Image (tube, rainbow, N blue to C red; front, side, top):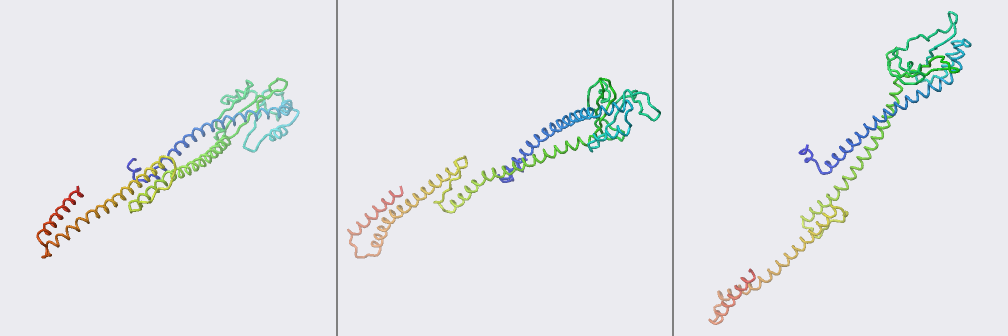
Amino acid sequence: MKPILKSFSIRARLLVVYIAILLIGFGGITLLAGQQISASAREDYEQRLKSEISLIAQGVTPTVNDYANQRISDDALQADLATYQDGNNNTLRLILLQIQPAPDNGPHDESRESFSGALELETAIRGEITIDERPNESGEDTLYTAIQIAHDRRPIGLLQLSVPTSNLQALIAQRWLELGLLFAFVTLLGIGSAFWLARSIIQPLYKLRDSAIRLSKGELSHRVAQIGSDEIGEVAHAFNEMAIQIESMLEEQRAFASNTSHELRTPLTTIRLRTEALRYDSTLDEDTAERYVEEVDEEVKRLGTLIQ
């Protein structure tokens, strides 16, 4: 992994690291939040079902009491129950516990019906409300809840409400979609911030690189513009100080070379003139020639001193 990252530019490495941190961090938080939201959505949905069946029971109790006492027909009962259907495949079922004797075609007494395996009905018999999940007759996963209907504190029957779990799953999927959109928005915002941060770090380095190239080409007067007061700004300040010292050093070298050239040129000129006179001037007397030799010797000593 390290050799692969080293083959990338600093900007690419920064972006890879930042984006990986964002995805791992936000992804982990999103999964944890999603699990909590799913559990909360299920709990809220089940509580809503309990509240819904309680309200329905209050509304249908008079109708159920009239039906149990054979004052209304089965069609009237079903019509009243149908008004509480919400169009989400919810199903209401009435189970009578005690009714008066009836003709052959009258309402069927289901008080002896076995509730084995129907947890919500067993709980409703005790006057409590619970939620049970199990497949229905068609094999579809369904949520069941039930409540006891009583009149004058006398149990009349049980009202059972069944709802496909697909309704709950659709609600949870909607919550996950909202969470996913939020995750995408935050991730895009984080990636944009990562690009901006990488650019703010790399751009000053590019300026330093360009300045170093210009300095290497002989633009000794070039300086890095102020690029901040952070660590990179300190590097830029140090670069400018280095450029000043290099320029000063080269100026001193030029001045030294110029001065040395001048100082060397004078004795060499004298030596050349004297040696030419000694070689080509046949009119020189002995005293003059000897003086010229002494001058040449003095100039040679002077050159030795300059070299030292």
